[in-house]
Image (cartoon, rainbow, N blue to C red; front, side, top):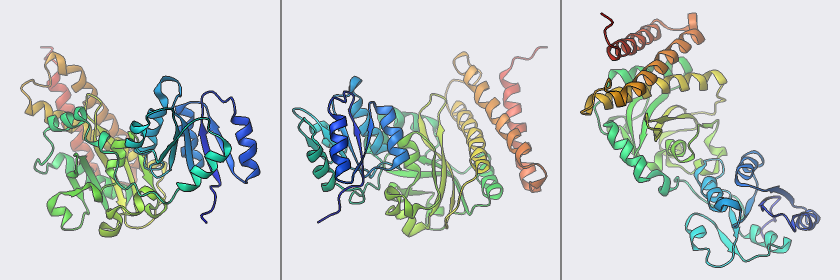
Length: 357
């Protein structure tokens, strides 16, 4: 017989019988964590890594479905079994990733045996939820950038080169996440055949989880993350350590990841992550400029002016932060690339401003 779960998270906004359930489960050697709302529940799941989550579907504000979707979209919680306590038709919960739905009341015995049937480690979610990845508004924003399947550009390539040199990593990418693939707008250190193809299927993508979870993904060793250890990027491409920060359009849609990769375990430092964020800001500025140049409305038009100034200013600030951070440790090539970024974005800012004379 399978072992009983050691830790269960119960999410119940009413809490009428929680104390009794907690006492009974404790007597069975199970630690019960309790949260009363979706936000606290998700934070608890991230921190304490429960063997199962039991959600009351009647959480205020339809938070039960929101919490389920958020658990499935986050790389660190995607493989946690979720049981929903629901009255009536629970089809929607099952369709969105719940393992089982049980009728109320949620007794300690029902929670115990249901959690045992769906112990963590038995699930194999290696792909981020298609509902999020292929979301129409996000896909339209990605297409509007004009970056998918576009030719390599020196502006983006200097960013991945800098990431590789400054962080001392073998691989760095500007990865755009399409509905069924990731396209490398820029890459350094990628092996063939992926370097030549400039893309992979999502079966070989960690970047999809940056987009799905809407947050940074920082992994020291993919073998220790259930949602990643069976990703084919580990087996076929040797991706072990990964740090990715989300790339957004000026409208706020997440379209990809600026990431650094190593083929062996690595602890990412705060300095590493700050550098990736700064390089990400520069990449967003170049993406916005490219999109403005491809569109019929120039960046200096009234509707685009404020956004154009904002992203270009952030790019200059990002470059300056990198220069301050690394200073004399920097190779001459990095100084040259940073100066090129500052000059290009400065020229863009000047072009946006009316000539005072």
